[in-house]
Image (tube, rainbow, N blue to C red; front, side, top):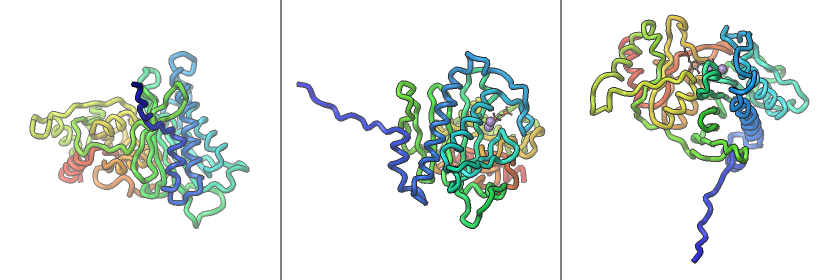
Length: 342
Ligand code: AHG
Ligand code: MN
Ligand code: MN
């Protein structure tokens, strides 16, 4: 006899955002539309990322961005796509992007009632584009403070990470995923290329409290703070009761290293180095959004001593040391920083 099995409920990102709208602090649909706009741009970027090996989109643009780093064509493309999507969506007042020195004010008739500002790393891990290794996008969303009006200024962005209303990342990997939080847990969506939709695949993501992976660019070892050197030695020691030695895994795309550690358990560290005495990663559009996600998933994010989300921003492209991932691993690294690197 034929028995009809109930279908597993299939939830797209668009449906999920609408269903969760009432979770938002100011549920009028604006934040939902903003997230939808980011999801659309992510699909367009994904399409180009998938073709990156084919066309002349590969390779350097021959320009350098505001950080003095080589800018690749895909960085430029991704930056344009996200900014265009935010501009035409009408919910965003201004954008701070890794690729632009100044903030981008969005002046369009549809944005005149916009309430949100967005910080974005449009293409993270750009050194991996040419070698077909996972790359990503990271974003952070703030609601403009009620006492602010008139033209958007840098002050609208000098807000601690604790004030984020939403944050997320896209990983363009063996599959493409969008992971985000609005402060009520973390959910992950995998792009089904056959229908062009992000579908809920990782509901209520949690980072394991412990892990056996540490991710750090050990090439910079000589210049690491003593506490980090001690932590690396700790990871390498033999101790079966704590599953050590741990494995070392470093992709060189923050999003991809973070995502792996989110799922498997692990810690990612980019401390101060000789070349980057304040760390390399940017507070507004790399550390803060991932810190919000890490905490929402039960993990931790610190600058070695203090919570990332409590760091007061002072400039758009400010750098910060980052220790992020499984709670117990971040705490162990912090303990060694306090003992050896104060
Ligand atoms: P971006 O491509 O946006 O400039 O970011 C690169 C970042 C981050 O993704 C990665 O973890 C880190 O830089 C790698 O730096 P090193 O090559 O110095 O290890
Ligand atoms: Mn980056
Ligand atoms: Mn980037």
